[in-house]
Amino acid sequence: MSYIDAGYAIGLGTLAAYGALLWVRRRRLERAVARSAGQEP
Amino acid sequence: MTGVPGVDAPVVPGVDAPVVHDVDAPMARGVDAPVAHDVAMPGAPRPWGPVATWTVRAMGVAAVVCTALTVWLGLWVTPPDAVQHDLVRLVYLHPPIAWVALYLAFGTAGLASVLWLWPRTRSALWDRLAAAAVEVGTVFTALTLVTGSIWGRPTWGVWWAWDARLTSTALLLVLQLGYLALRRVPGDPDTRARRCAVAALVTAADVPIVHFSVVWWRTLHQQATVLNANLSPTIHGSMAWTLLLGFVAVTLAFGWMLAVRYRIEALSAAAEEAELGAALAERRAEGLAVGSGAAPAGGPDTALLHGALATAGQPQATDAEALCPDAGHPVAVESDAGQPAAVRLGSAAAERAQ
Image (cartoon, rainbow over all chains, first blue to last red; front, side, top):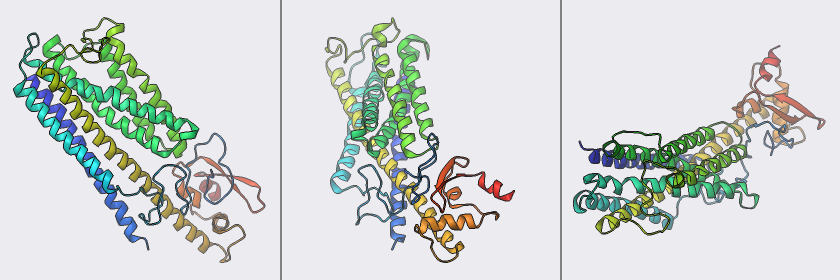
């Protein structure tokens, strides 16, 4: 693997992983909030 | 601000006792105040409306498309450089990431912190925005160092040099990590926000040093290619357009991440608020049950306090102990006669046992 491949793989891979992590966290929290709201009268 | 909700006694000055918001009261600050038709959690942020949802999604899709185009142009279309040869292809990635890390993330965090510190514009919104910008900025700063190092190894022959640009960027990363650590220190939300706003401004002060480091000192790192003193980019042709597209792609990615991270911050605050509200309601119910059955004058909170004091001598936590995770902080509460009585949380159980 060349330096260029490594740079692109690490750079874009990290951004993609961080973006996915944020998306999952937001989804979980929104579902938790919605669930709590549903339990309230 | 009161140490125990409903009890009109001030928190002992200088003590960072956690603040428990009244369950029925809207959030004191911030644009995410609960609305009647909103979710029932106290302090819950409003769900994103269709415009906001559409905008954030469009930003995310545009970021992915622009990034794919940049990669295609950068790796397959643009020619190799006369000096750097194929290593110039890393330049389509590294400066755009650095642009976000240095200017966008810290511009946002610095501005939001100033707006929080200024009493007229103080709002929970700015604190959350600064926190979101610093976290996203930290990822970009780390990537700036890593991609720069990968470019530096074949170009300079070393992975790392104690060059002014590299060192000041590394210092920026350390300061960012310090900010994130400071954010996790327990304390009441206002105190935490104030500490973090000051820390963000201290961190943002490093940004001009990073930017001008290549001008002020003799460095290995090359001088600015685009944002130079003459504002005339020293790159041209398809390389310049590819680099510009890289800037657009990473800026869109930052915008999407910032919006999502802000949303997480707002939802987390709502969840914390809801947990405290539930705990408070539970303790109120217990306090009323433990008491004589008749609520004393002063309302249910006073009844709770009466109930808690009546159980002195029993190994049972008081309401305040149950609610305040920072055990050991003194909080002043009012006794029957309205005289302040200092109750040392956490140590109260030990005192009762004696």
